[in-house]
Image (cartoon, rainbow, N blue to C red; front, side, top):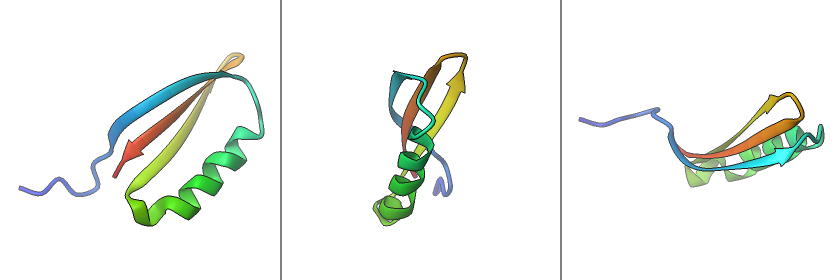
Length: 55
């Protein structure tokens, strides 16, 4: 059975809050889409978590 569309978390990195990181994640997702990776960013208080997923 094929697991299409499932995201597998590969790595996370906790960083200080920086509003420019959203632009970096958007850039990476647009340019690396064909390499079956996806990037995410979540914000909680003054900390952000950058995530890398395999698609």
